[in-house]
Image 1 (cartoon, rainbow, N blue to C red):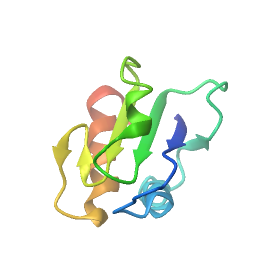
Image 2: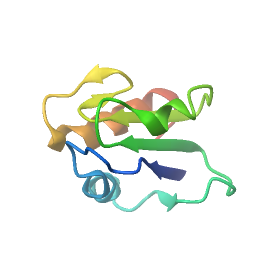
Image 3: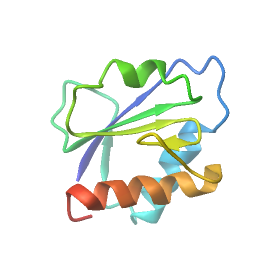
Image 4: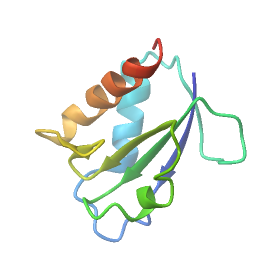
Length: 99
């Protein structure tokens, strides 16, 4: 599975964005191919905003292949703590694919 990752500018992060993506890769046993290039082919776009303002995610609101993190929200659902975010991302990916 190819995932394009886009980060916000990091002006007011309440989560460690890169650690979340690293943990996601680890949980999936590196079975995902991550790119940071929007011009490449991808199965899903993972937008990781550091806070719940979600500035970067708004740019991609119409993309149907998006999984969106904004602080402690994943797809606008509150996640208890930062450590649970990668698991919730996987759950969201499984809803629409076979991870």
